[in-house]
Image (cartoon, rainbow, N blue to C red; front, side):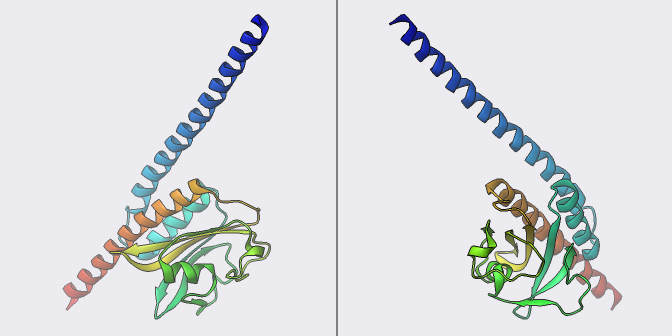
Length: 195
């Protein structure tokens, strides 16, 4: 009887320690996320030049978050145009575009909702642009609830993305939308001052 009580107490303590470790890991991840987002907001909003903003976003995603297949697409005339890409095979192509509603990024642009695809072979929307891509995360960039573009991250690993990745890329998309809007306002003001 005494031994079974000790085993029960031992199991309870073991579960408490396991739960405590899980909570600690979650808190550490949240702290890391907050630090990344704080640094990201400083970097993204350090310029009013759109090209520099897009370059800064790409550098953050690639260097700070270690996502190595990344692109920024803007919605223009019912097409997504590639504006900036890291390891994107079409980065140097002049008029590369995806029609609104086509592919994962086109779907995200059309619906305004983010998408995680952790096995592209099982998703009929997926359009292969890069070789060996297995997972994709696409998040809309919105200004005043209107989708203006998409941040797209891809991986060669199965099940590469989770809710934490979605949170981070969504937060970066939100920060990017503010920086893009500020850059557009600054450009409009500069143009009106030249008249």
